Length: 91
Image (cartoon, rainbow, N blue to C red; front, top):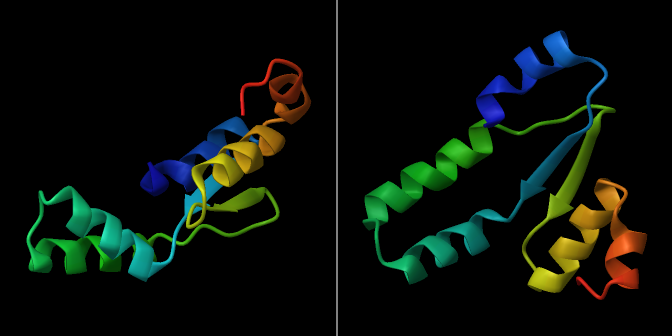
């Protein structure tokens, strides 16, 4: 959860934080497509996502707004597993 990042930094330093994000527009579109939340709930969810921006030298930010395979590859690179994934054709 984004709300515990600073606690994790304090208690577990050094840490590497992988922050997966998406634009407000894409987030709202994905939530609308799920069909489980009202327009009001979606607006609140998008606003809440903006409140928890995570920054710092220990943060690797991944934009999850494009093709899933690109997000997966970025995540694998962030955890140092990209080469292994390529070897075993995971991504």
